[in-house]
Length: 266
Length: 179
Image (cartoon, rainbow over all chains, first blue to last red; front, top):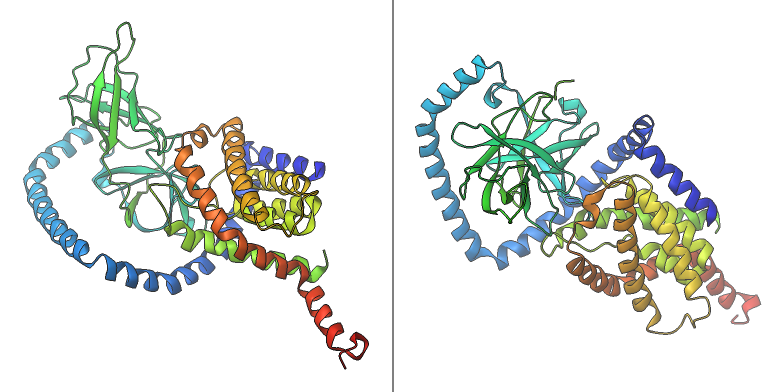
C-alpha cells in the first residue's frame, strides 16, 4: 500500500515538474493514439442508437430549434455584410500597429469529440492534433468568440481548456477605444466568470464586449471577443470593480471549433 | 491474482474506460456526469480485500489518468487509497449483506471524488475545487449505487472465472460424485 502511494506521488511529481512533464505527456500521447480509435468505434456504434431515441423524443423541439437557427443564420449573414466595411478598416489599423488580425491567421477546423471528460476541469477534446499543426498554447475560437486554449496536443487529438475553467486567465481590452484593460478569469462550472483588475470609476456598461488584448507576450492574438459584462458594482473602499461576465462563445454547443495556428511570442 | 485474472481485470478496466468516455459522458446533468472509475477498486476490495483493492485502484486509476486532463498519477493515488480503505473498513462485515455493496459504492465514490478534488487543488489545480459539489455528489452517489452490482459481477468474473469453472467441473466430474 505504502509502495503504491509513493509510486503515485512520484508519478504526479514527474507530471507537474516542468522538466520531466514531457515524459508523462509522451506516455499520455501514446495511450491516446491507441485509445482514440477504440473510443471512436464505440461512439460510432452507440451514437446512432442514442440519436434515434433522442430524435424520437425531442422531434418537436428539434424542429423549432431548427427554425430558430435558420433565422439566426439569416441575421448573421446580414450582420456580416454590414460589418465588412468596418472590418476592413480595422484590419488596416491593426496592420499599422503591427498586430496580427485574426482573419489573417491560418486556422484548422476541428470537431469536438468529448466535452468535459472530467468533472473537475472544463475541457473539450478535439479531433485535430500535432499532425494537423495543432500545438499547446494555440487559441481556439468558435460559437461566437474565444473558446479556450490548447493545453495538451497528441498525434491526432488535442485537449482544449475552456475559458470558463478555473485555470483560465485572458488579458482583455474594452471601452469605446479599447483603452481599458482587465483579466477575464474562469471560475469553473459553479460560478460565473469575472473580469478583474479594473479600477473604480472605469466607464462600463452591461453587455459590453471584452476582446483579447494581444499585448506583449499575450497568450492570444488581439481582437477575439472573449466575454460580455453581465453585472458590475464597486463595493465601498474596494480597489477594483467587481465584474461578472459571460463567455461570448456558446460553450454548451461546440460541435465544431477553429484552432488558430498562432503561438504566443517567446 | 493469477495471470489470467490480471488479464481479465485489465479487460474489465478497459471496458469501463470505454463506457466512461462514451456512454457515461453523455449522461450529464448540468456539467456533471457519473464517475464509474471508483467502482473498480471498491468492488475489488469487497471481493478480495484491501491489498488487492489498492492494486486494482492503482492500475485502474492510472489507466483513467491517461485519458483525463487532470494531473497524471492523481487517479492512481486516490484509487489505491480508496481500494485499501474500503477493503479495510469492510473486513469485519458479512460480505453477503445486501446493503454492503450500494453503501460502500456511495460512500466510497463520494469520498474519492472529494479526495481527488482536494488533492488536485493541493497539487496546484485550483479549478478542481471550483465545482458544484452538491450536484456532483448526488449524481455520483446515485449512479454508483445503481451501477455497483453490474460492475461487481464483472469483477467477480475477472477474479473467480477459473474458480467457478473448477467448481462446476468438480461438481460434475466422477470425483465430484455426480457421475
